[in-house]
Image 1 (tube, rainbow, N blue to C red):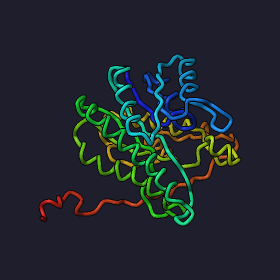
Image 2: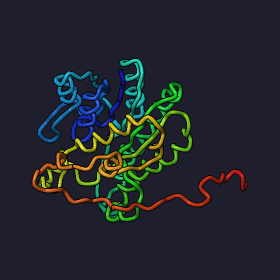
Image 3: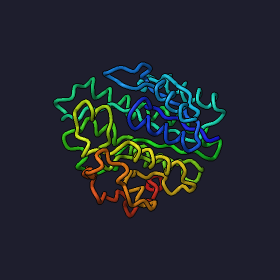
Image 4: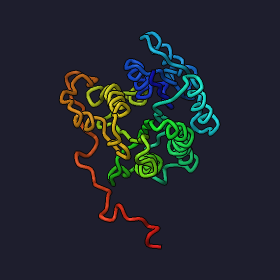
Length: 281
């Protein structure tokens, strides 16, 4: 049976990824810091586990603080030990503050970097030897394609999230041809979540998290390495796989949410792409 680990899985996109993978034959390690549901933070690893089991799925909880190195390493190894192997590792944990530099205290900047890029780095370091030994594995990070407009008004946050995209693009060269791939994925429109509920974002501009989870499923089920190093958008990727009707993902059935991402993204490759710096030293 295929096995996946989702870090950052107590609500929103992470919860839906767990449910979608489970419904498609995966046993899932459900990892997050939140162990108790409340009005302030509805959902926990245990509520997700219960939902999964009610649908006939197999899941196991792991309490994991994404700022704690040992928590992440123990979660990866615990998942491998519990299920006997691991096929997919997804890092969805995230901290967010959309403010300019002068309005973002250093402590908040450090928090975002610890949760967003550092946590993912630790997960990858821990899971990669297992995948390389198996000669197969799929790593998915939640981060955007790289383009200049993304940084505007939220430079501190962008540093931490684009770092993940660099990790995806850079590591892809190190694991090329090994059977292991790494891919980044980002939503094309706003996605309904606890944050959008708290901020009273209207349903007409939101999509259900199912669209993101369906894209994740397609990515991890890809048999070739064509997605290695790619930074994808959920809608655009699903369209490339043949999907044309996205109405089922609307939160408001009468309104198609506006696209928040560019339709054309920059190509970051250069003509010297395959040249080695070592050969010039």
